[in-house]
Amino acid sequence: MARIGKAKEAFADLDKAISLKPTDPGSYFIRALVWKTIDPDKAIADLDKAIALDPANPKYAEERLSLQATRRPPDPAPSPAYEAAEEPAAPRVYEPLQLYPRKEDHSEGVAWELKRGLEQQVQGYVASAIDSFSSAIQLDPYNAEAFYDLSLAEASQGNYAAAANDCRRAVELDPGRAAAYKIGLGIVRVEADRLGKIEKRATDAIIRQ
Image 1 (spheres, helix red, strand yellow):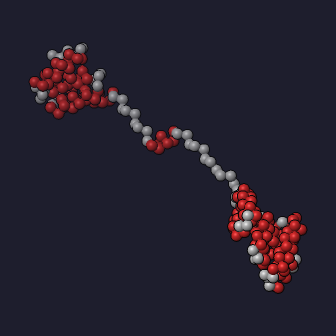
Image 2 (cartoon, rainbow, N blue to C red; image 1 turned 60 degrees about the horizontal axis):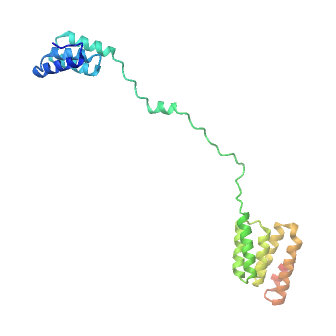
């Protein structure tokens, strides 16, 4: 007979009894009673075996129901939605409201192109200087100094019509320096007259205010 008070010895006796007579439901039932306080799942497994071997015995079914009722169901795993709700939501970041689009600052690029253009012009690379002044105008179409420097470079190459137009544009953009820029117009006129490289209508356009 199994010594239920001593679980280790009881299991040894019951395992031996079951191995000798695996169709005896009583051995499974007694082993279930030993497992009851140690491992309820194994106890239920032995009770199921006993019920399968002797379904007419109500004691096996009653014990199983009693054991099942006393078992604490495992805590359900939290759903992903629950876990997400537990985590604090990160604060939203809003871009500051802008009534007008930002204007990019190209002042450094413009200054660099103007400096390079003047250096190229002094060194005699007038075509390269014109490219540099034109690049400055692309970065800042409202830079009067860039138009004025471009007009002088164009005039030195004999392109007086373009020089006059660009010099007038400089006056329009910066009326405060109109007097200085008009001197440039005068230089263009003198060069045009001296070299004779401009038609009369272009000359009239240069000197017309």
